[in-house]
Amino acid sequence: MVSINSEDISERDSYKLMIGSIIPRPIAFVTTLSESNTLNGAPFSYFNIVSSNPPMISLSIQRSGDGKQKDTARNILNKKEFVVHIVDEDNVDQINITAASLPPEQSEVTLAKLTPIPSTKIEIPGVVEAKVRLECILDQAIELGGREQKPGCDFVIGRVVQFHIDDTVYENGRVNQARLGAVSRLAGNDYAKIGEVFTIERPK
Image 1: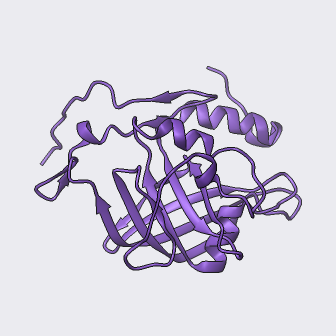
Image 2: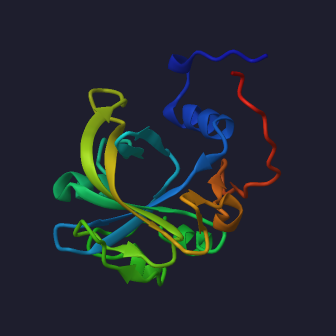
């Protein structure tokens, strides 16, 4: 077995080891509004559940090498609101387009030809193409990581204030995972579908 001291390798090498090992990762497509009210959108695979009481999710939004924030983090900190969409087999190609680096005044949503839809409880629109979208308000934002006194990421915790779930995937208070067809992130340019599902009962 290879054993590597994390302090002896570069950030890029750490990145490659982590994204190749911590798989599969759910993908959040996040919409935010810029200061000029441009609807920005970007995918993030450093994403997960924090709590169900109240419902909360987390996003880790990586910064550039010089510590510069991404548009999404800056917009969330400014507006205190954002929408998380679950990426699935039907929308992944369009969502992939939104990973392009655009200036803040240009909309990735427009570039990918996604369809904005007003939210119920917050100002930020979502997009129609997602079968599940979560309206969120900012609960906490923490600067973490980095080197030479420059933060490496913005760790954002959002509280879900409204769920929107397509009729085709909603069944008796649950989400039908097969019909949702969520995709996950692997390393490089690779993604994964749910694949084979197996069941193991928890011990009592």
